[in-house]
Length: 261
Length: 271
Image (cartoon, rainbow over all chains, first blue to last red; front, side, top):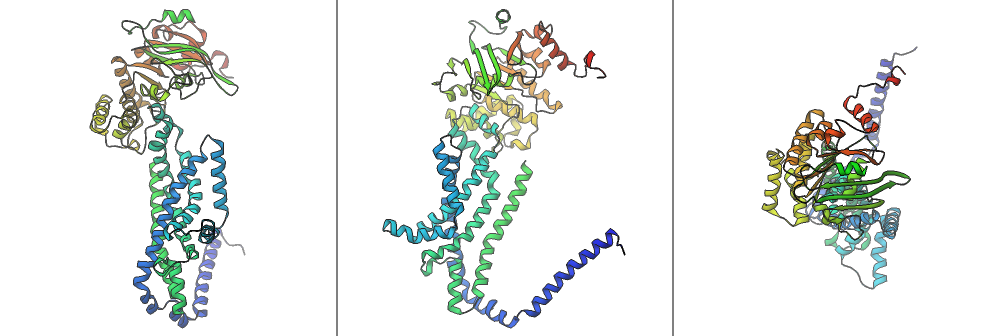
């Protein structure tokens, strides 16, 4: 018998809710809650991590990310300007760089820095320098693309107005175009920061001493020493403490720039 | 055409007639498309010259060749005693003395009204702090917006934005002001305020080259009106002559369409 359109819609929606409830019930019944409470969500284990996971893990993740991001921003700006240069070899070099670092896994870059640079130059950089360079090199490739798009999104009339007031092209770029480009790309740039926060978990490859542990390394060490998965859950929550406010910030910025148009 | 030029003596130039802009056989092509095909035009100190003509006639391109926002293909352009078409000319130095007002205002949206008017003083002239503020406020008062110094461009109406753009240009103490259809992007009720400011500027003796569709403004404020069509100057002279009693058929045709947009050609009625 044919159903009316409203009946069909109601039936379909009802089916979706039923599926959801069934899935939750099945998971709840199948899961071994005793073990989960002991091995995965153990409050005592979580409590034992508490000062260190924040003052070592969280702090280092933030420090490494900020260092990498700062370097990536600077290098990304240079690359973006090279991409927009009228000198062709600059454009080629910048394109080559961006394609290279966007195209290989960040993990490889970290391995290259952790082991390749000491081999090639016979010295090791300090941990902060190494982190800044390796995270920065990867991040700059993405940021360069974002920045180039941002600079090109600034209306041509802005450059013309600045030039017609007697500013040189470099001055106009620095005082008028780039500040506006940054406002345009603030949301995507914040996304880059979130991605970089997570990429910082690859730093463990460099071989860190205890005080240098970032969140993931800290969690893995605690996991093996305590034979318990709870530390992984705890550091996961710590990442979210960083990234969720950033994501919230992105949405706020997007809403604000939508209003300014 | 040379006869027409000779007939058009500037009415307000005093003493020795000094050309602020001197354009000779100016040509500009975009690819195969010749937009300007041999323009000769002088603008004298204190003179207000309005350029009128149909869209696509090359008016804006002519204006933009004066401060080299467009690079001329051939010919010479002299502006305040600098030959800007000379490759060795330091165009940034010339542009300081040439204010430009754009159709789309092009205010800097990330800066306050006051900063819009001081940033070039600061970065180009090295005029900083209180002195730059004083100059900016003086010109903002001149355009009737002294109470908007702390506003941002997005908070202003189009007419207010365009007046800020005029104040911004004036803050550089220009010897010449270029206006590129300054009222074409404005709602009709906002046009008057901008034209009033321009009128006052003209009365104060500013040298002005104005591309406009405002025939009333051209008639009242211009010392000389230039009619362009298809990349060439068709007719130029006093406003009462060019707008009031045009000699050329193309000028008459253009003015008829502009002044009476509802007019229907006899042949085209009913199709």
